[in-house]
Length: 362
Image 1 (cartoon, rainbow, N blue to C red):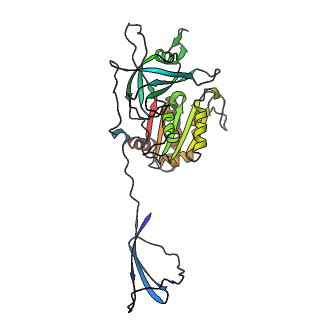
Image 2: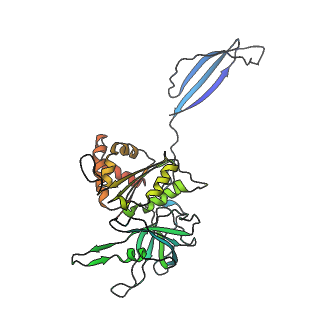
Image 3: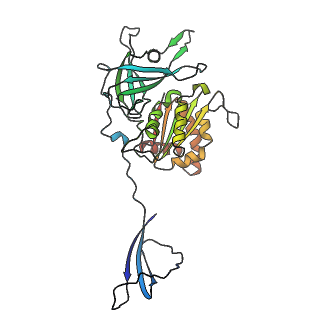
């Protein structure tokens, strides 16, 4: 609560209008100010008595109006479409999971020459080479962008993706390879890539540099959050300096599947008060009850703290990855909200309307 004070000083009649600078020490008792009250007190400055009369008004600080991230006129969508995609080139393509990880994940960087002006949290489409079983060009697949708007090289001329190679056995016992993921993971530097977009406004990062940003990711769902955190912790911007809290929960099956762990360690080193990271390694970790450590299991260990954060209007939740985690998080919050007499599902709806609950799951 802020206090506005209007004060006036009354001097006793005197032939002299000047005051000596030698003032007596005044010991005042604790004064409780109420809304719109007048308060007066006589104090002595030198040998003169001075009456101070103050009107004290308590006011609630003005609330900062939220600016919708979706109304930002600078956000570009669908600049390049399937019929006329942008042709970029692969600059680098590296496997970022260990050899013994259950599946491969690759980090790749493509040229854009500044022609795809994306924002953190957006996606691009990729049209793989070749034709489908009907002899038609393959359809595009969407991928969350894993780099900040400046790109991994800091020159706004590249875009990065984090892609897991999809390989599975179908009901007939046949090995099936995902068309686009295998195309991307097999790309060699110098190869052309057909790119569409950028698309999406749901996952744009909040504008408030003092926000609490809670990021929930499984596997390659880490991509948009890497883009957020590069901007928050690795870059310098004239109009943006992150002073809030970024709290990442990342769920993976094994330690060898952890993505960008070294980068996150550097972020923690650079900004220990502004960055928290908690991993949930389902095949290696359990909670106190012996349950596998999924992302919602890890979050349950901080349930009370998370609920308190969710009561604030500058806390933003982002969820990207496997759809199953959303229900698990609901299960955690239902009972906590109920203790405060709040219907969690209705409250979550309000958070979503306020752009504080952002979900991109598959």
